[in-house]
Image 1: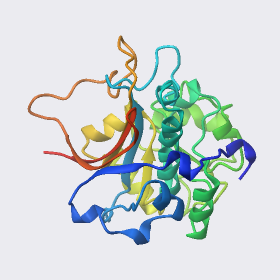
Image 2: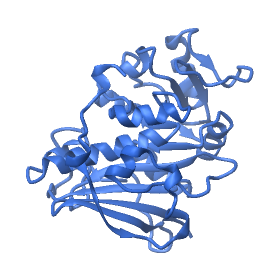
Image 3: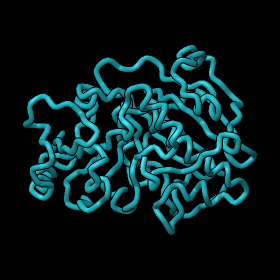
Image 4: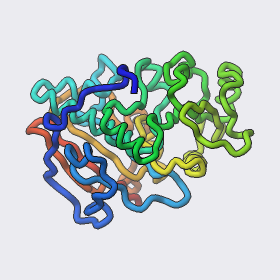
Length: 306
């Protein structure tokens, strides 16, 4: 791992207390799935049985106590945790959970608008202990980066995720978006719609269209990713997260709470999308709750749909 993608996460400083655990048998007593560092900091961790025909999806975000996921000054969601002056190690634990989830997932998904606002953002695993455990289990050191773009018009072609050869990348767009992007990306990008069977590699760069008129077909996308061997994917796009909920395709949500209050019109999950209704909305089953101090709580939810 390059030093630019490495952060020190001392286990004794970020160790979490599990204060609640669901009795759901699918989520307990699965020590075999837990990396050593995960066991030390978080406790035992595993996924339930995965879907046979599509990728299993989970989202991870940190929010203020009033449900905001960013301050108005910056789109960087990590500031909601780092802005908590009462527990800086709790903020580090928040970021570690994101890295923990990256380490166990085959892919991470981000939106083109998100990476355009954050030019340094990548889905690397910044904890070298977790990265080592991942590699020992036969996974690639860097998860596949799946970047979604509705029409390709504002895609940041100069972003490090696109330019760096060590970051495996699949751009998912629509028919219209593919026409916009393909010429700019050049022949080094594999066209997955027209390629013969293609195996994912540590340095693959590719593009695929799934849908049209600015709307990506989410069911088709998750089935396609499963066919490539992507069993689990971490969602780091707040807009895409809610879109998956609407299609009943988000499986889990990891929502950490930093005890700061932001208020106003700051960004929240689903803010730019239509609300769910009284008769049609998802529910969240609490699987576990961890704490670091009186100022940070970390909740794992299982999504449940009507």
